[in-house]
Amino acid sequence: MKKVIFAAFLSYFLIVSCQVQARTIYTAEYVKIFENLNSDKKQLFNQSKKWIANNFNSAQDVIQYQSLEEGQLIIRGIASPLCDLTVSKMQCNGYSQAKISFNLAIDLKDKRARLKFNNYGYAKFGNTPIDDPITYKLMLGRFDALSSDFEKTLNASIDNDKW
Image (cartoon, rainbow, N blue to C red; front, side, top):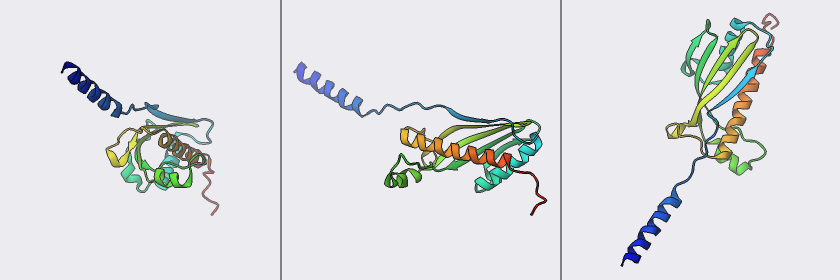
């Protein structure tokens, strides 16, 4: 009888422990630094606000904090992962449906800027951490695309007289 109870307990323990899925810990933040920009802190601040207005649905809703003196903007945004060639079109349709929420801190100094993406997770599920390596990779692709667009905006000519 002891062997039967022990076998039942052991099999229950093995079944329960096999169902627990180990979560992969990914980096807590994604940082991009831009140097040798063409503007001072005030111009970079204004260009950053224009970039936010162009890339997010409502600049007023996503900007959580802004300070020209500190040269800092904090944004709470949502984006979908950016598919690349490593994912099939069928998979891309599924992955692009995911909405990733994130915080973005923009730090500005004269001729320098830093983007810090952090606190990211699935927006539809209470900011559940990203636990899928493909979603994580595609999310980093979206952050790269946003970062390169940000850099292009900051390096764009400020001359608005030619229109």
